[in-house]
Length: 275
Image 1 (cartoon, one colour):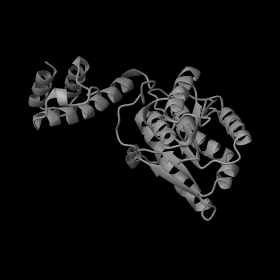
Image 2: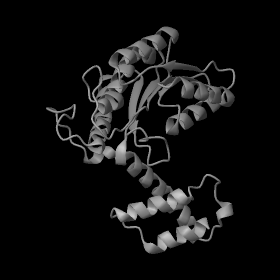
Image 3: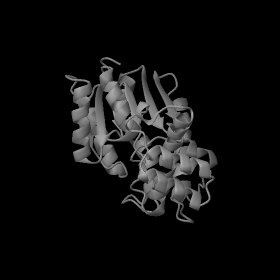
């Protein structure tokens, strides 16, 4: 990756942050597209530590806005003669239906439309960087999704998880069509499912949905932790960040209360590990 130019969205936390820092450490010059200037500045500082002397930069935009996404794409294109990698990673999930100034449902605008607008705004730079690639973060949540072409803005019977799944299906369909249209240009397009990982994702969704996402994430991490304990590892041998805390017990018991199959033995062993 040495000498490569990488544009990445959603890189001020979570998998985007880790990816950006790893790429900087491999010698890539990373251009962040961030919404929050405070987190953007902190991310830029970390990039400079991981990959010093590489002129990393942060650009700021509200990717739920078509106009702002076009603006930041033009800003980057004016500054960069070529781009080697574009990673569309920013995404969100919302408990209640919200509509942007463009009249788009917020999840659809942020998770799907922004990918297309930014990618096509940087088309010339990507072509100039060929062989180059576009990487779109999708999700396994697409598997149960079905597109309602007469209701793409989810005006009827809004469900945050359902709309999120649809947006991820849109990511995959868009990636396939992009790959078809750009075949032979030297720019490839791929989408990926990142897995279920501990990030800030969903913490702005609101209501019980935020709590539910937090519960499932903690449970999945805890399951791995306790499984290792059951196999004989001692707590002191496991990573410091292992998710074992009072919050774990609360969330496991809450998960059981709403019908998830959490065995009593698991809860008792988790209590034992924490003590």
